[in-house]
Image (cartoon, rainbow, N blue to C red; front, side, top):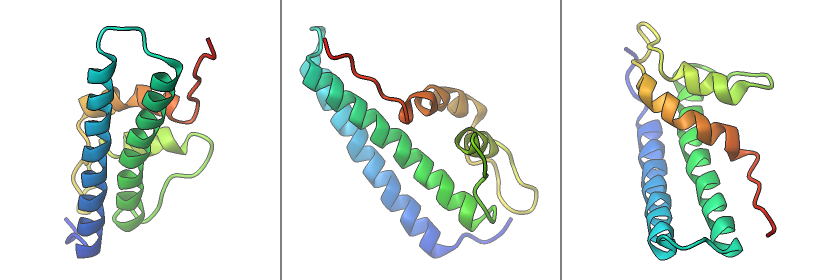
Length: 121
């Protein structure tokens, strides 16, 4: 395996810390909403936080793809290709970054990350 670039490590650690803050905000919002019907404002906040969460994950994957894999996938489905690429080991270059179950868990976020719709009612 290739040695890890120290700058990449620092950047990924920073991104992970940001993700932890987003997850904390999501938990706070879920606690605030409880079992009641969420307001429009709560739905908008939740949508924005989910978008931030997936973008944070994707930013980490893009950094790894650029630095280690030597490029981010191209084309209309590059987001999905990137996610799936990260569950594969690249012999002699890097291990799998994500477990298959993690990819399956993240795929619904991929589908909604660029298409958040909040009902106006």
